Length: 433
Image 1 (cartoon, one colour):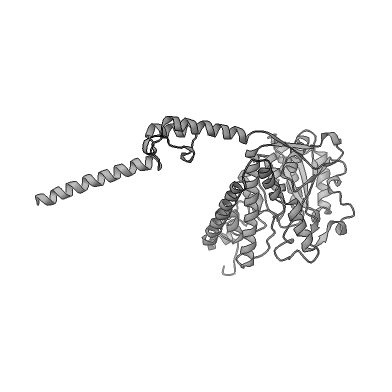
Image 2 (image 1 turned 135 degrees about the horizontal axis):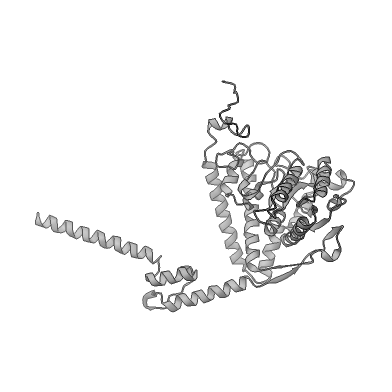
């Protein structure tokens, strides 16, 4: 009995030692650094990967943390060093050429953010393409790859206090407005984690908390909604601006001209954005529009034509348009852009244009490659660093796909929800009622 008690006592002491040592190792985050140095690292914002231990047996010294903090401060300063890039000349309507931006000032930090988000947008849409071809996405699916600079440029010029409403090519706006990739893909797959609870699908993204109002399936119908959002901003006096996006295929609709007239009368802070991707479904712009100067279609309101494949050009044009919209009223912007996929996933996109045309745009004007080129050619990042970012994003998208696939569909009782606004206990009759 005495031997057994001694063994039990030793076992308890050993367990306490293991727990104590494990906690100490966890505290050190895999490094030989005491609690005071860990606190110093947190205070200086220094990650352990930046610290090179100089003490005996790899022990971190105070000098090591301070050296890492200094190196981080220098890197942060370098990332904010301004760089000026020239832009393709913009074309104005009712605007002096001298007010149109000709250059853009940026830095490494901004360009890395733009590249990371735009590459994420690209890979998310490619993932949607694969899911659709695997018959996991049903119904319509309109992809945005090729047009990423438009969405990123608008977001970089605006904030979430500004409103956006767009057409059915809306997946990436849900992402840039703050939603998770798995939720967006979940909506495409009809899963409950989606922004419309899996009941809306590709054309019905929505995120009210960050002023994104869809996602609309009826061609051109979102444009008057955008003017209504601008009216709300003016009525509230919150300083917000509304971006009302539509394609060149919708540009001839009468409702657009009607709402431009109303917005001009009321001097609404509204920016009408025509994303001219050169084709309305399968019809080239010159075959569908007598007047292809979409930026001047507002007649009596200012207009700007901008290179929609250059995120910095879009950003600078939007900054100017936002200033004008707040001070004078509505502005019209034409984004000269291009889509790589067909109009929707049911359209192969090669019956009305050649493969050489598509590959030519990819080679010479690709918006993601443009930012990538700036980062490498200006010596901001190495090819290996860019590759690591791309690999990380690919893994992130792959993980999001698996989460979306595993998510649950909406429960049966959701069939009766969201039919009427504030419907209370009103239950529409079903086939078994």
